Length: 162
Image 1 (tube, rainbow, N blue to C red):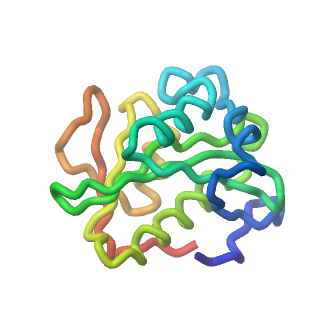
Image 2 (image 1 turned 30 degrees about the vertical axis):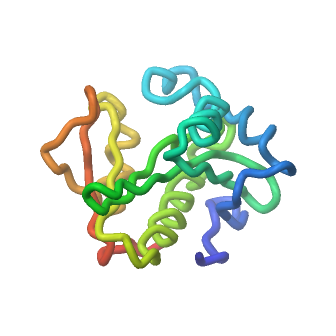
Image 3 (image 1 turned 90 degrees about the horizontal axis):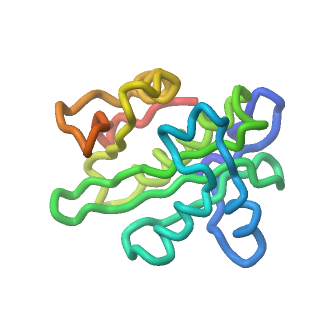
């Protein structure tokens, strides 16, 4: 991963494993109130999915040494795709470029895996902020839906630049 990705405030954005030193800070990450129709009210829900579901891997998003978000990923062995989910940036940290840099880091991380052919994610059609971000990163609609969410994909060989 490129440790030199920074947000608009010049803070270095990194992805870190969730462990004893940061899990509480990750669990407390909360989106803006109006985003709760699209993501969990607290990242704690995503941590539980990672811990109890056996499918997802959670990562803390940090700006310098402060936890400011959460992302998670999974591998679908059936079709050889990697999935991104549980993308949440704390309400106070939004609009600073944290989400974009975190996504770039996660895309790079997944693309470097030898089993990565494609990266997918889904979002609700009314979540226009997510739609803009994912389109800017090169994700394209697949025509598939997960429940009521649009599924988009990025071929592993097409990693966006910062």
